[in-house]
Image 1 (tube, rainbow, N blue to C red):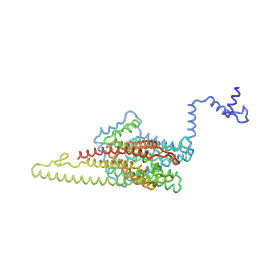
Image 2: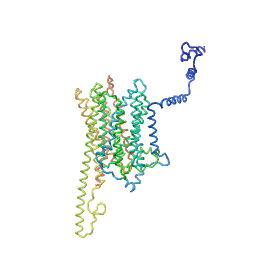
Image 3: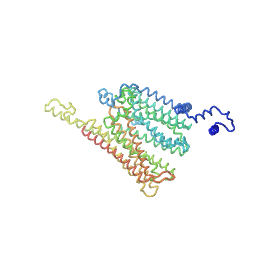
Image 4: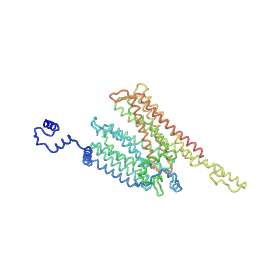
Length: 617
């Protein structure tokens, strides 16, 4: 009985070949059969599998670039970081130690030409091109290519989700990378920012090359690893490009620089959409994007680096805080907490930005609106009009960005003329008063002593700066309120006549108006944030914190908007799921509520600045 059972098990386990005798089996087959019957230690089994993957995986084509890039990143960070743990950074120390020495070091930069500002912000063109094509198009295409079987454990949607998570994690590291950039800039004023930008570009280039190799070999794991290295390099380069404008330009040119920065970012997005349409028309494979990324990265970084080096004269001092003298490892927590304790309104500006971005969810559901509200059933027509509507939105945003950049310098010049005229009147009155006192024998005039002298005070420079900031926040409130109104009226397209053409025209008009309002908010928010930075802070760390605040708002707003819309599913047809008008109405009005609340916070701050400017006068 036992022999029969053993023979049955051996035959089922495939130890013996057909027609083979009992003495022909091999040692490997017996060992395999023994493991199946007895089992194996799970720790040992896991270690063997891990060793097998390491032994056969490191020789992959994209493994060497990724490992080399990670090694470069570790070496570069070790050259900056202080591994001592004896003391900890204090973000309030710079404010407590605001001595005359630190005030002497913080010299306001001179005004720059428009060409210089364009060169300083040229890297934003590449970031716009990358943002418009990487996750929305390239990752979607790579997901379809790397995951050919729809029943696989990892689907295209989950692959895109992992890519978005990688991108979000890289943005989350912006405050920490900003702190490293400030540390490098403070120790090497003439090359710190440039070195950090070049290090980020180098890591990004290695990541792009490794991702190309992984795509050729259809290796999902190494592609995701290459994307991690790629996005870490992008975060390092991005935080530097966010810092150079407020660090090397005077506050009077913040609006112009923010406008030019926004225009370049939008133009990068527009060129990306146009390039995708042209590539589809001429049947060019989507892998041309990898070459375009490398070329644009170098072409857009070259003017920024060259301009940064030319503007750093012998007396140039980077705008970085004096507080982070402790080890960087002990200051990681401070990198995310210190910006929330800055004086001057910077934390409130970041809060307003986060709440506003919570209301940007409807922007990411344009394709679904074309299907459910406009009524486009053809997938090809949906993609075609989606691209054109996106370009229309960006053109509207570019128009208001140009207008905001041109209007603010004119207002600043008008305010300067008014202040000079007031100062002239004050001097004339003081001179008349001095002559009258001299004729009466009252002795020398006391008009030149004290702050005000014998006559009225001159307009304070701080008063004019406060008035300029007040105008920024007032225009910001109007732009945000307009954006909320346009968001509310978007779903009304469903009530238009049954003509699909009329609904489509209305949707184009609404998208253009939405772009006009969004472009004004986007460009002015950056200038408002720059103007609220205290004199002696780690500026790259602060810019990284602002980026995280914006990302948190966009991510949560997109997620909540999707949940709201998913609660109003109606039917499912060949074109996918359908969502009712009530769902879009609730989603848009909820998002508009967040926008209006953020606008209310901006209005309260604008009134506070206005009362402050009256007090300073």
